[in-house]
Image (tube, rainbow, N blue to C red; front, top):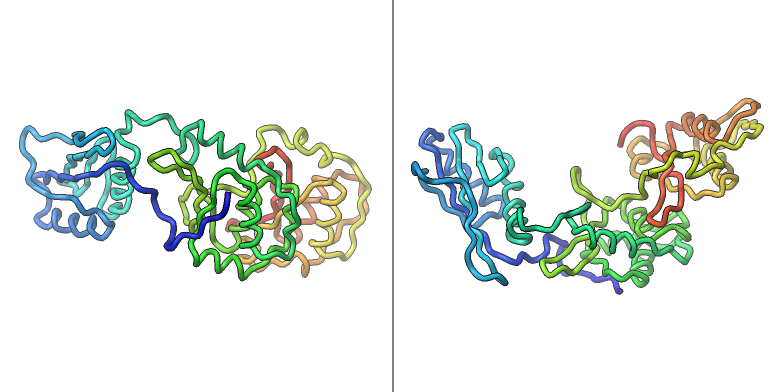
Length: 335
């Protein structure tokens, strides 16, 4: 399917119902607490809300009205004496107003928690997540080196069953930067994540209320569940890439870390991807750092570790969606 350009930044998909929020203020709540919460919720985008004093018989809960196709959820919450907002199964402080908004949006889109199907990663039903994994196993069948990121993304998108959505601003940024890696042979999911990550973007699979899937390109933010650049293997490294433990006689003198890494990966017959974000953050350029190892008899995993360490780097063995191993090269220091 084709990559879709949106007129605005991708946000939550349309909700299937409407939510009304009624907040019951405890008699011991602060005099200004209701007004402060009302302002915080309004700033977070919560509209249909009203406050009143709590009665002796009032309870926190959800009443459902409307129709099956367009339900209405009336949420009764309580503002406590500790200035916390209690919702059914959740508790928020005033600084969490944005999380309250997401909780209400989630209710509108997905309905009552007890009636939702079991979900897996990214909040998708297990069946849809497997559909996404299968779609993203498709290998990249062209060379990506020295090609702008937007062109690579569009070409990958043409081979997928689920469409990719990104806004014009992201598309413009991707057009202005070229890949230094050749992602040919890696699966589409890992390749897409690699294309987006250096510019601060990521891909999130989302499902609309009607069950339609889309891959949405978003700004990467802490705490956001995003599609990763590969996955941690479930099997031991020795089984995933046996060549790491093959012995060799090594003697490396005065070559760059980049050249040594290139030669090691060539001998292991495994691709490697650089964590450009981490390298830029810590000012590491493997092409400018010289490394040395005295002549010795050892195995490739140890050679790799010692070479990268001299450049302030380390490697992680990962697999793509199709189970193909590759090396993820990142900094020793956390990003």
